Image (cartoon, rainbow over the protein chains, first blue to last red):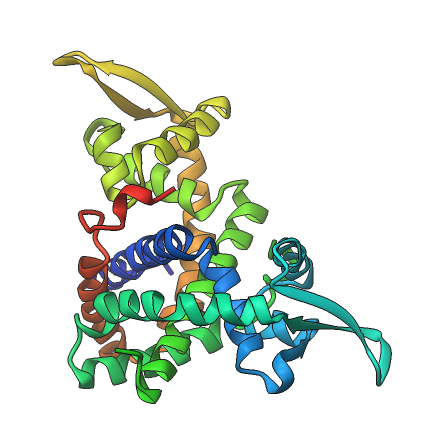
Length: 156
Length: 156
């Protein structure tokens, strides 16, 4: 069941994207906003949530990461006063992440530069039809690589 | 120049792939072969090169990483006796990476499990036509995110 030559060529191209794109996104965000792309994604998810608040479990789902990786990232963001943890008033065992005013300002300031880079790398390189196809293919692969799969328990 | 709603949806799907796919690949390879996906890629590139040997600079290009990140990875692989560094006989300033017999055995043993996971996540989820399209779109994006771009100097 090894990959055919055509499949190997396709996979090689996708694997190159998996190396280059996160490296470029991290470099731009680190340089201009002091954030990793992962941290930016967490702030962005909170910024667009009602009351700028999400259960940490829900946020981990959005970020496709384990609760322990999320917890380490939130601890870093708390040190910069961008996020705070609070107990859920409806359920004391549930912890909420709340974006602070400083966190809102940080993600709003970072968004234009980040989106400009995404535009340059992804959307300037593709026709609108190709971009539409990319979205469809990405959803199929994201689903197949979902966190409910057998290898998920060993994710870091 | 912010992203449109359609572009945001496409980007969100691709960003999910960028989180989930490397996590799944790393988890499988770490569990079954004691390698990260990045390390596997280095061993695979050496294994398919003439004489199982590449200039480290060339290998860094294949892996889309800086020479310093490559050097740290090669140091780890040397400790496991999977790769050795030797001076290029034709140019003493150039360092070559050479796959050892143990490195060859490790990558050969790891390949079936890795390729099976790639098949399950990518090729089982797509039609042959979709897989072909994915390769074409990935090459366009990989090119646009190439290491010769302005943000490359700050890559880790």
